[in-house]
Image (cartoon, rainbow, N blue to C red; front, side):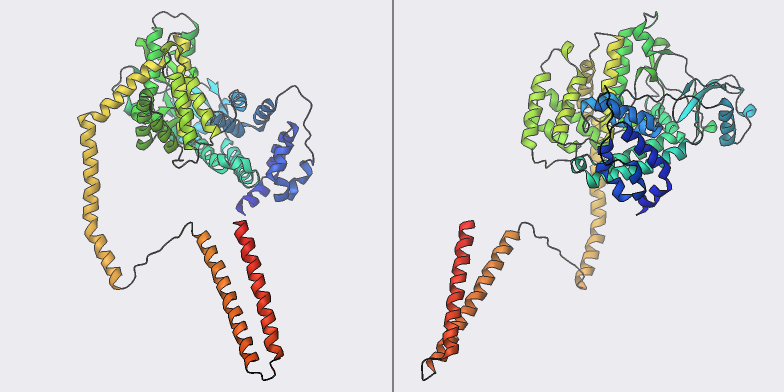
Length: 556
């Protein structure tokens, strides 16, 4: 009952949230959660009927406006859900995608105080100058321009005071809502509300820890240190903490400007293809990718070098996922719908799906519809949306990192077409497929796989004597236990029970008849009352057994 006690600690916030939901006509959702039954103190704010206001807004617009009014935690939660077309309808996805994370900045003096507190030094020792007017402001923090001793310009991200406590309270409430939704709303169970809440909890706590963003940037820098087409800003570890992050200030041209203006010195085609190539390399070759490559997070430097900003939201794929995705691309190009279906079910952790044949049929239709299109008519965003709708219909759920991967590809394709209208991401995908095949068949990969297999067998062989010794030791002392689990034996058990009961009745009936016969046989008068009563009871039992047997036979 820990979540109940947490609820009572946040009574006021609960009442605020429920009031907002009801005001936007979502009283039916509130009642479906069973909040009034779980928390009696909320009964006063929950109406018995849905008080949906008369409005020109759609249901989806009401949800978006309610989320905006609920504050930064719920806005970020809505933004996360806007990337989940595999579990939400497209109308709601479109509305949640409009959510903005822009909030008024907090005072610059407060930022100075927090930086000095976090870095344990006066501002004059830390920076040669620090502009108290922020460059940008968001719900979790804001960015200030500063200059290091020596003249290097840096961007200092400072966390908003009190935001951690605010988000912690809202997270506890979200977990409660998710648990109640899973228990009380049956059609929501398949999307796993508690799992979604846990995933959001993990994401936003990482975003609250600026050390996580710094480590992301450093890892990204290591991956692309030899790639001259990309520039990665430097991070300043000695001037960074959990709540303050200092990185190199980049003065480049925003991608949006190159898309909207005819700026000299930039090759639009090169920029478009480089940006998309870098994203696809991150996903399929490195398994670590920028999950929010919108135009505001990409700047272009001299020589058409691409520079990504804001490393707070990064996706990560484990080697097994990356291997499956590479095979998926190859299978799509080879038009093998069986392999594509198997990989989709493997990625969604549903290898034994009951409707596997129906899924394969729809996958085959998708491949036929899109693979033979001319490159100029191909739209990766449309293909991925069709695939997501298929998953929604068959209740298949992708891991969050794979959803972010799809979103990154769609986003960078859109950016590429803004910059260079003739841009085709399918050209790059074909090159990536060739690189994947080359890597898998290359001597370096084969040697690496052989070495890993050798190490596995070596461990197996080295552990074998010890495992056998333990097994024999237990066998000598009679401590080996073998457990059997029987499945599908219930019908046989029922049949055996029925046969046993019939056999028992038959034995009782036979004993009754034999006993009655003996009693009459040894009675000289031939009118033994007990014997005749026994015969009558035997006849009744025989008729009852006969009727039950006939009825059951007809039922079967």
